[in-house]
Length: 110
Image 1 (cartoon, rainbow, N blue to C red):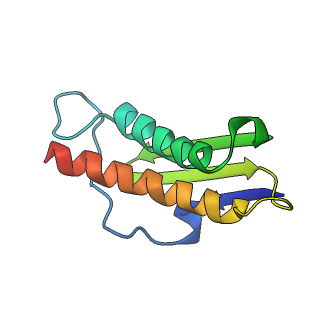
Image 2: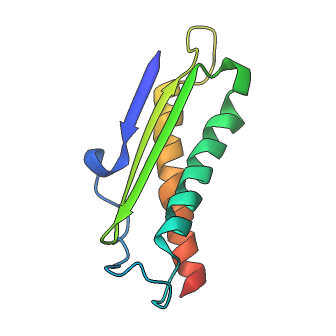
């Protein structure tokens, strides 16, 4: 079964997204690249902590951060017939973990 979850399109953010309009390094807060990398690593980490890497047929985590808006799209194709883990729930959890990791990143920078 394949699960696809787009955090930005499915639900409003739990907290207000940081307002960022300038990606230059002299602004306060983490760079856009740091935000994207943090979110991507968190999402992938959740998936790979719940499924063996050899069991994951396909995983695509797409993260964008533009104008202070974080979008996380997780596509996961993993077995579910003989697994106790629901791939859709894992994809959902991965997207939420990405958001939480970015929230924490901004909190550390404040």
